[in-house]
Amino acid sequence: MLSLCHELIMRRDDRKIRLMESVFIVCFLALVTVSLLEPATAGAAEWKLVPGLGIKEEYNDNVLFVENPAGGEMITTLDGRLTALRRTARSSVKMSGSVSAVRHAKSSYLDAWDQNYSLSLNRRMTERLQMGVSTSVTRDSRVDRYLDEGGLVTDISNRWLEQVQLNSNYAWSEKTSGSFSYAFSNQHYKGRDLGASRSQEITLGAMFHPLWKPANSSIFTELKLGINDFSTSKIDEYSLAVGCGYSVNELWRLTLGGGMQYSRTTREGRNVGFKLDTTPTPHFVAVTSIPVENSWSDTGWLTRIILDYHGERLKGSVRLSHDFYPASDYASLAVRDRVLVKAGHSLSKKMSVSLSGEYTHTRSAGGGLDSRILNTIIWRLKPQFSYTPSKDVSLRVVYAYTSNLNRLTGIREVQNRVNVELNFNRNLLK
Picture 1: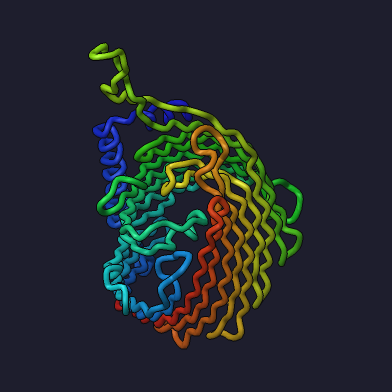
Picture 2 (picture 1 turned 45 degrees about the vertical axis):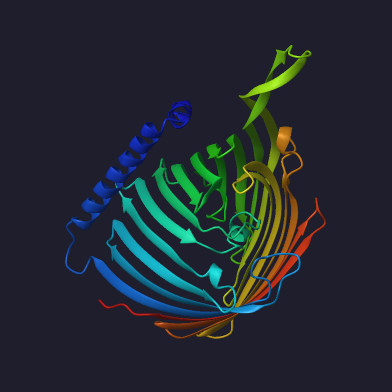
């Protein structure tokens, strides 16, 4: 099955890709229609229609994320959103959309209308089979948008991102289950081709819950196939990982995982062709450029260690990972070492505080032509205070510190941000 899926998604013809997208859209709409028309007993279906309004004031001392910023400025964001939800015992359908007006006090050329639209469906087809489909379209303009996604800083180009995901889970028995997922992502930038990418990923997984206690301990395995097409290169990824999760007690849980990844990178280029000209003396003349492809492979280990704590009022986690991922803004395969630490404490039913820290070292995978184009270290620290006086109103105050060191050039960029966010939500159908 995996080889068949690989053969299908390796076909690069745009008409075949559009056909595949159309099939997913038709299947998605069919599942949505079935769920909406599903007969439900009285009171079994839950409907929600929730409009929302958000206001955010941000002070940013380095908006463009450069080495020597010109000075700080205030950024005002007004966010309008609408969410619709229908949930029954067997399925749920959720639709949401938001439009954000971003206005800068000084750098008006960075003003933007960011947008996000999403539609998702989850349905229990049988007692053993569950399926889900989701799609989203996002337009964003933040320079630091890749910090959460991959631990990198990008440029100021406005990005459009379209995503489609299909997932399913089948319970073979009370202790064993299998999963399948397909994800498609297409991103492009206004006014330029560089950085545009199209990615597809297929994941097959299995999970086994052993007989020993505690009951929520598990053993898992995961096989992935990824195809990433960039404007100047193509990266094929194959990985296999295994691991286990063990609950030490009711408060602590430890997850360990490891595996191996093989990647194949193909980068397009051009060689100049020459011909011999004998007039007036023999010499070579450049006449044409010949397209060529340079290919190389990378192999490496995958590691994941997660320690979670779930107390009554205090929650926290420590996550260490070593993995590979395609850095779309560099059209290159990157190695990423990451440490994430999070802690949150509930002061009361309405107030809470949290603190998160991150260390990310991202560098070129080391093969072929891309061995010296990327080597950055990012440090992040983010304390946060949240206050929710009612279920319709919330207030959040966030400070974020980010340091980005380019180890190839020695340039360090530092950013400090302070956000004050006020959000209003109201369910019109309650």
